[in-house]
Amino acid sequence: MREFLRPEPCIHSMGTCPGCRSQMREEALQHAPGRPIVLLGPAPIRVRSIHGNAVAYTVTDVLVEWDGDAGYHLRWVASWLVRRCPSQERTAA
Image 1: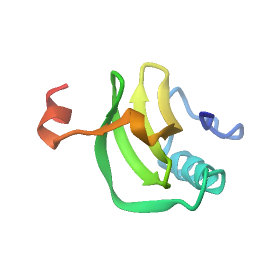
Image 2: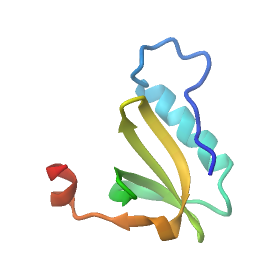
Image 3: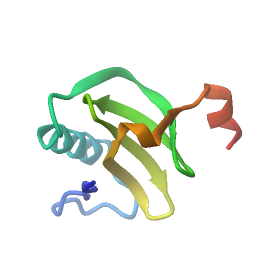
Image 4: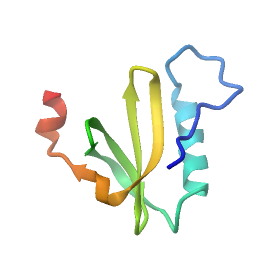
């Protein structure tokens, strides 16, 4: 699926500011593959070897966000690839 990029006008360093993260989430929700349902609080998940948070979901996909080596990432991922993690596993990584 398509990864949502940091807004062009953002002049911040490699880190993505909270305002830009919010703008990226709004854009991702507008391009959802179906009707998105926003979670009340981010849920810790794992997609392959990446640990992140589920922000929203549709019938077929999950909106996943994570901070990696290259900064903040936001992407719709097929739900069958996503595994929910207990919060203990997330903090141990």
